[in-house]
Image (cartoon, one colour):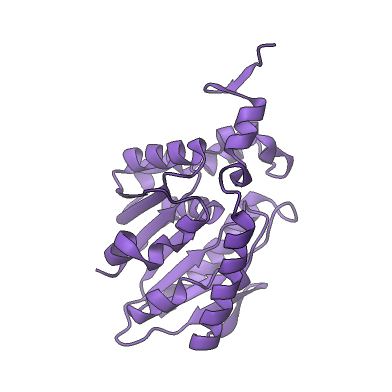
Length: 255
């Protein structure tokens, strides 16, 4: 039986798989455990302050040496999982380079809607402004949220790792069960459609072992924005989260 195509050459089952990272990274659980363990180690070593912005908490890791501003990192988790407890593992490498590192909590879906989450992070950016220039990064759904913020305001730099930047195919996949948006909201929250608004230094990174849709979306965003691109050979979606702390992407961030 021929299956109906729902997006490009994907039928429903194939599209659902293309937006399910468990299909492409069977060691996902091990990577998530490493995130938490490495974040706990960073907290022990660096002793971040836990501060409040609005109704949420934020871990602020102090810069080492001459300060170069704040690096705000937005965690992934498909918009519905993870927290600052899983997301401080970039702090040792970035604080050593002179950045204070801010890792915020924010509401998760489906408890709140995506426009509300963006509004919370917009408030977080405003709260951090007095602490110096902000360098923004995000991984996975956090890269999507960071890209949305970067279409609204300029940052000292923006680093997007393994994100999705057009919500149309996402809302055709199984993720529509918890990402509830109307067509106007989906268009507004698709930064690929607003690429001309992105200003300043932009870097994109993705792994060659990610799902084909995440690779396609990253390539499309890099082309639309003329961003500096970092392709990570053999790296899956969850391993890519470490790219801002090591290798060529890290070297570009601290240059």
